Image (cartoon, rainbow, N blue to C red):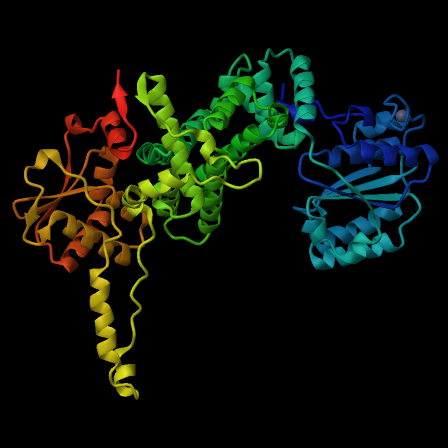
Length: 586
Ligand SMILES: [Zn+2]
């Protein structure tokens, strides 16, 4: 037996079997009922929404001898004749027959009266594909059609039709089919062929159909061919949506500001062959779902995800501040539009990932709030684990009844020096020294200008380094001075130069987190993160480092991976970060 696709096998034969489009169906049924059939119809709407199907039912209905509630009876001689293909109904695919000759041929055919029924119906699919001269030929037919001719033009792109054609047609717009209707239809089809299915599998297929019945059924067909029973796992394997969980993992790392983890997951997803564009789209879609789960009480219904997936999204939403989600969405949306122009999409997406996952590197208020939230969550977790932490009362950050933000006066003044020290690394760097054209000043009337300018330059050199102070490196012996002075100073100069020279945000970000030291006269940059280490060793990154060190006169340097054993204890780090609050391990 020849294979007949599900879509053709389950194609509706009457208006009542149609999946949605009731607004179109109602108009057509009324016209059939009152006998006022038009000469030209334009069916517009997305692919797979039933335009051709409705056109065929309509063609049979207007010829049927005893239509039943507007639909063809399927029993009278005309219905039977039309079912087996009749000269009275012609279908033309304008995508392959788009020339003027086809339209002239059509013009001749139109003149002959119908053989079986009352009307000759011409269905022209993808009518926007006609050439200009073909449109003109069609227009002549539409201008003075014989009484027995009915034209149904179908298109996904009505804006490409000439106004002269549009104005002669009755336009009916087909709409995308809601997911629940697709699900219902799919279950009817599966019951019809006696296929067992999991409810989640049906939802996943309907979602993938994206409003198109035809697309959904062809996806269902692939899934059915994949395994005997239609399971969610089988469907996700076919759709490649198994990566919902993978995307969730990445989004979790992003929202909880684990930059190393986020970059590692990104690398893994990309190395498995997913394109950068698709990855960004997936993450944005998921972020959107997380935001809905965070803000809407009816999220479960709105998202209509399988229960297990919804729980995962809800978990992400509950563990995250709304601002963090918005910030991540903003950064990635920017990146998505950037992808169209950039020659190196991978760098663009990695930069975005690092930017989102290290709010500390962003100077805007949202980033700071995200950072505070992350620290609070970490502390709360420590408290839960039995570590005594004296947090400042949380309500201090909530506005009081008069709507003003309370300022804890004495504590703020006391803590100011500490705060300045803590936030030094996230304050914006001082303004870049403007470069004047010295010749311009020298040749001008104020001959003194060059001196003034050089004076400014010296002053700029004295400005404190905006770079984070390198942490002491315990396993490298003396972290003190080398041929270029103190390791801290060298690192500061290095970071300043790198920021100025390098457009690669990822490199700047990962470098600012490195530890610096001198071992003899070798300047060391150390990390305990394998991904960071490998990234620095990459050819393009290594070349940039070499260039930067060359410029600042550091002849011997090395990028080194610290031993796993040296990895600093999380509690120790927190004690350091929160000196003002006593942290006791019980
Ligand atoms: Zn009939």
